[in-house]
Length: 226
Image (cartoon, rainbow, N blue to C red; front, top):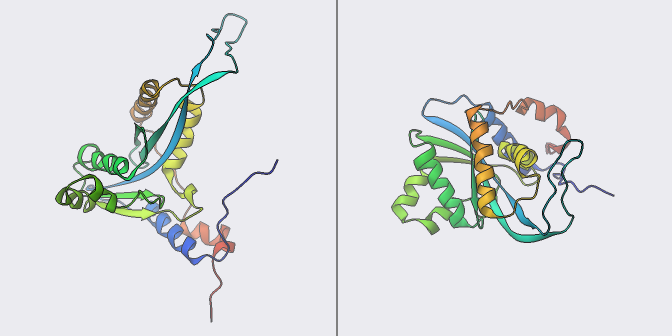
């Protein structure tokens, strides 16, 4: 079986420019009135058991039937402040422009109301744009929120640059890698995982720099035209 990878095109100036921009953001020194936040999304299909699972007993592991009943799909927004050791998981029915706008307003007004600037890293999905704020809120409110944001987009085929994707991977292994029957349970389990990680203030140790990229990813850089 072949694995499918999203490989950036060689010699792509657009990819390199966006990559180095994000790497610069990760190397930046932040003032007390600033915070770095990464944002990404994933989905989780909810499934119900069709037969009662057998609980684990001494000398025997638990088991469940291979059949299940599909019970809808939920979207999960991951907001991760890698230098603060903070994250928030927001479970929604969809991931529309309005959903994104609501999540960002909470980030600005409730999560970090004391920060003058929120440096926001995310992929270039069509919903991830300040214009989405104007589809959800009155113009004055939308502008107020947008002025608090400094947005940086990861390049196409460069989602690995978003540290929120790394945190989603951890959540998938520790919390979502099992059958979850409904959105109510999903919210409860995601919140419990989020709170435990926040209590431990688990941060991200990002070490890949622009200098590293210019050596290890040299093939992605375009040739200089003389």
